[in-house]
Length: 168
Image 1: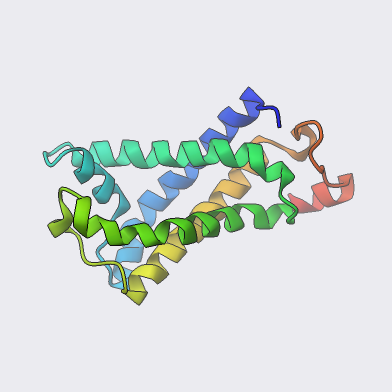
Image 2: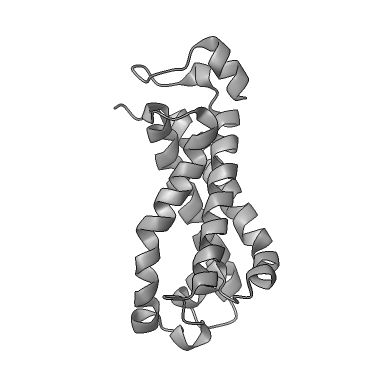
């Protein structure tokens, strides 16, 4: 699989957009789910305990989204799912793969005392599921808009024109 630089950069942009949407809506989902967990805070306070943690956390969160989006843009054309389902599937796969890692937060994070225990908390799991689903939806749609089916890499299973048009 050859890496297409334009596709990769566009995917990174889509991932950063999706991560931005995630971060912006967090105050709402924290109230809805009743879980004060915040990814920007988790990342920022890992980098610094000072006043700059919101900036550091936002930058790290957007960078994580961009890296995931860059990878997604290069893998998605080969995934045998309808176009609309690829982003949500990627978000859910990342969620299920990374969730067991929350057990380590209490052990290794320098600001562990600032966060609620997440492992075993069903509402925290539901909140993280929502966030990853939203991220995947935004990522998939943004990446599809930035990397239209006609720009699919050579050798990828490009959908027939009718399916490509209806997938938009």
